Length: 435
Ligand code: SAM
Ligand code: SF4
Image (cartoon, rainbow, N blue to C red; front, side, top):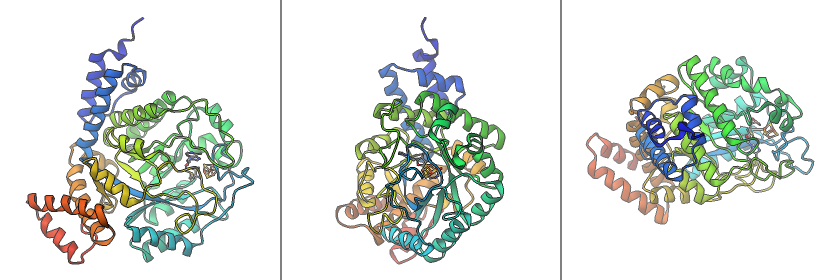
């Protein structure tokens, strides 16, 4: 029997709904998941790119992860940090070492870092994380810290939020309970329900910006993508806003991993479809692509709806200072921040080191309304240009500096809203100019 759910007219109605900034329902999501007509997929990709530009304009936000510890009491079968990996060289950064790594990244031009920790309440517990956050804000020019840590209680989340964390991020890994139980045999993470409720607890504790995802490759990706979108829709109906970002982590080889023969492998083509479906299902959500992926694929994903990427990343504690301790997984894109900035400009997009929304209260429901009205991109565009000017003055060199100068000269030539004056003030030494 013919699947009328994926008829071209039906798919085009769904695409029109996304272009109108409406969240898709699960029947519409399932139509996209079932689509196998390559010509229609070309339309889907094109629409995903248009939706991204309607919300955020051409800007692509850049950040780096800062790994604090690889000492873990869990045994997630796919992770290099798992307790069963007896070959791992373990390290937890001291607070001073975390500040040193953050300073180094700040000197390279980063303004936003994602703190990542394994789960170890004694060696890398909440007191330690809060101390790291306080010291990095006090002693470096990093402007916003996000965190990907193990789930916490509402009370602990409150302390984490009060320390100044912008986005709290945690991936469900898999919504499929039997797979979850198999992949997470030991430690606190073995508790499926504790992980499933993590976003409710974070939001109840005051986090208006949360980041979600599934680890692609553990179970059938179509099922997982549907389940994640269902989870997001539930948060939206309960709190008035859903996740601030969705990530698309895809399973990578890792030292000591027990998941080497990946039955549910997600191909590059599938990953492009996943990015496009997330973009269309939740038009205003940031989509984050990490350096797990190869450079050429990341560049393509930027034209299919992704809006944030990490660059120049290391996935081991002390990895920026020197290679040595066990990394979480293998990196696919080893380009530096400067190389990635040059590439983004080459794609006709605008790299951004902006951190303004979190600090100006444009978060949660407020952010969602601004994005739905297509008003966020006005902030994004100007702030991207202002942060690029800082980057050009402080860090850029050679060809990339020339490319940035050309963009900025173009912006000054068409400036009508005081942007030229703001750029001049940055040239004269003023920093953190934003709207
Ligand atoms: N330890 C905390 C946890 O598990 O939630 C937070 C940080 S963990 C280091 C960050 C994420 O890395 C995990 O949620 C998982 O999705 C991802 N990850 C772990 N092993 C991976 C691998 N081999 N390939 C790709 N991503 C992986
Ligand atoms: Fe530990 Fe997180 Fe790795 Fe699991 S995914 S072993 S909890 S660091």
